[in-house]
Amino acid sequence: MDKKRIVVALGRNAFGILFPDQKKAVAKAACAIADLVEEKYQIAITFSNGPQVGMLHTAMTEFARLSPEYTVAPMSVCGALSQGYIGYDLQNAIRTELLNRGIFKPVSTIITQVRVDPFDEAFSEPTKVIGRYMSEDEARAETAKGNYVIKEEQGYRRIVAAPKPIDIYEIDAIRTLLDANQLVIAGGGGGIPVLQQGTRLKGASAVIEKDLTAARMADMVDADALLFLTGTEKVALHYGQPGEALLDRLTASEARTYMEQNQFEAGSMLPKIEASVEFVSSKPGRKAVIANLSKAKDAMAGKTGTLITVE
Image 1: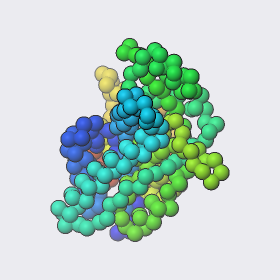
Image 2: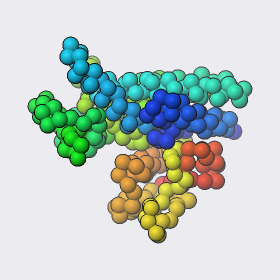
Image 3: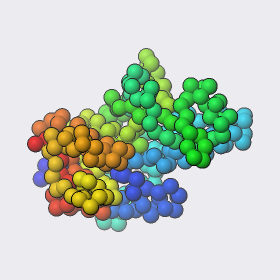
Image 4: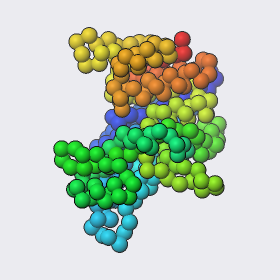
């Protein structure tokens, strides 16, 4: 068969916040990826890092508070750190699983920078809550620095923008690895959001929705399919309600209608649907699949999950 190229987006259930939990979780994710390797797919992987980047930001901020001679690590640095340590665990778990099956295939993690528009309206309407709880004085200091904060029951927290991805700076390296039939992990957490300033890339105080970056990457490497591996079996209408209905198939136009009806939860299923519609609409013959992590192989074979096509 011709080599089929796919981008696999791993959801939160593929990872853990505590390090021992993460080791167990990535081992399960590695099995799903190895199943796809055995089916001769060329694979690029991206992953969620929401809890992890928040943990790192909290830790680095607390460290700077306890040791004033050190500065607080910016969001872009925390994003890079999360890409590195999650990629480290994931690539080693995949390598082990492949070798246990008698397969030798290099696995690499690329620290990935993603260009965003400085005039993206998301910067004036931040939505992503991150980091530790702060006192009122600390929140006032953050506001004085130009950062946004939000008040919750337990205190104040930072809230950052979620701009849309425009370009992936390391895309040539990602394509090269795929062309060499290697397995590449890139765009973790949506990538590090950066602003282009001449020849310099400046980290933005933001996070990018990883599902949208997955779709952008899939388009830029000319993938045949975009696979979202989650904790759910299929996309559902009226999710969690008495009239819940699981969907086997979904067209782009149907998905747009359901999005207008607010059928999909923001920050959960909605970005996956948005990304799927964007990807399948960008070139004829493309498909997106949303399925359970444990059933990746069956999902790509059309036996489970929700298949999304342009029509």
